[in-house]
Length: 226
Image (cartoon, rainbow, N blue to C red; front, side, top):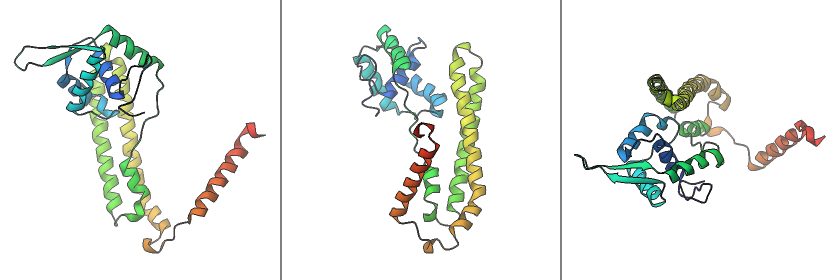
């Protein structure tokens, strides 16, 4: 499912980011695009890619055209446009949350890809990448822990706090895995050989042979196959 083609029960053409914005507006408060961006950067960024301001405003305009939000111009100093969810929007996002299939997370793990292609990297480079990733994960772990502490003040934030606790634990584990990969590098380098240029990779026929062996193993383990 792409961000442009997602749809909801009832045939509404709303992107995943659009549903996230609607979900934030279910608090009942009027929010500007700036407010929504700040809220996303405080909490949702730990588990959902943070959209740019331009995307947020584009999605809000689309939601308003669909009748899911309403807006007004706040004639204050900054003359901001404020958005509020409509009854139709509240009903739609509730249906989406309850009825729309929940797709698995889409993972693009760049450090892990570099590990997979470690034979291409210069000596010491993979260790640098993993060390940087461990520091990044620890930074997000600490930031999520801070948000967990502050969200405990409001009962209405109980579910947000639960998601943040998940984020806190996720990044703690991610950090530990990166550190473990660093520890495993010496053994991997020994197994790969001292002369990477001389290593011969298996030919493609071997890939398919392994695939057949795995399929046969799975069939042996399947009780329904007996």
